[in-house]
Length: 201
Image: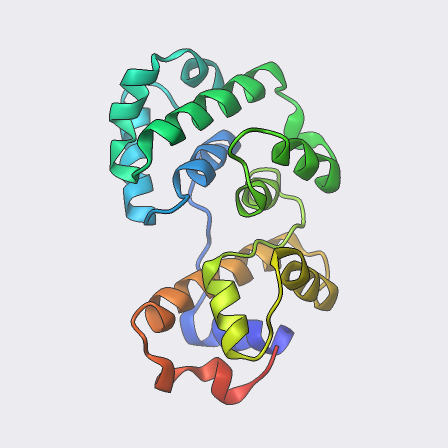
């Protein structure tokens, strides 16, 4: 696995992901990025910032209709507005939630409506700065091309068992996979793939 990480780092350079001013902004982004492009998420977050709705307290109290309009660009905006309202209310009532151990934090997040494994793990890793490797669609696709298949938990276990629980490395590795996926998988540049050609996870 370290070989793959090194290859991606040489190919793409450091990504310094996830861009956010506060941990709760990461939480917002993790919810909004479901089934949409990051560019749309950035637009929505800027809308929320312009209206003073980037903190849990204010976001939990905003009218649902107003919130829907501000995040409409991310798609599924009605569903996401409800999820944002719920999670912001939870964070407002539990301000120390990100201090919990990663396993416990993950379970709490998964118990919230609309929070799946990828979203929960993104919050654990990027907002709480705790080691939990994020598995997204690009990770699954790249692994499949390299002959590695399995559900979310299996793939996560493969990554975590072959890497030290290093938060910066987890962040960088995931960001590199996403960027590589955009540049190669998303553009169907399969014949140029350095991963399948040069190594196995």
